[in-house]
Length: 180
Image (cartoon, rainbow, N blue to C red; front, side, top):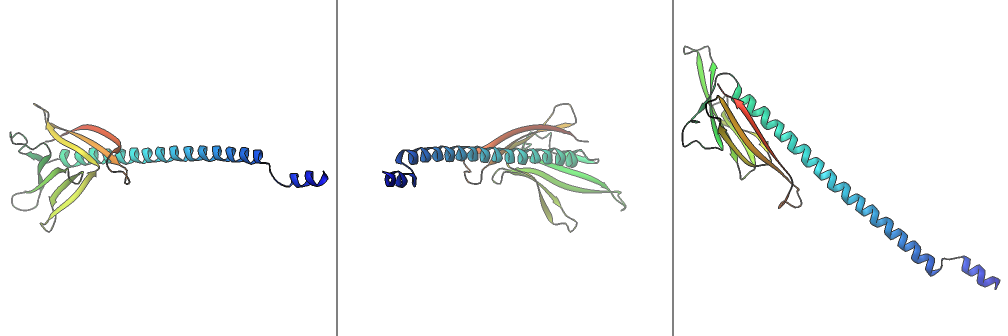
């Protein structure tokens, strides 16, 4: 009898083994759930921060490019005005005989690349491109009637790199800038 009691105390019974297995399974499931939720929250936070940064860049860029002094908007009163493209004519003071130099640039939306681009002439007179913002899924300009303000409406979408069919986050922003 003593031997039987000694041999039994060396290991776990089947019941004890099943209870330990059940407890460890529950612990692993809880850890998996917490990890999954943490990853989802991390992705959503990253998406939110990225879109906030892009929205800030859009407002800053539009204010700087359109509202600076000596900038005129070309063709905006034209009935053929494209609501996704804006041509700017900058009159820059110069020391030559005319006293003014003209520089033309264009702000336009590229839906195939989901970005807004500023195209302008560089110092060497070649066309330069600068991406103002990315992650744009819709964009349009609109002239506010009887004012010197131009409004714009943009929708930003952030997609996960692993599942690019459904966006994690969509944000819409509106703004207006004064032109002279």
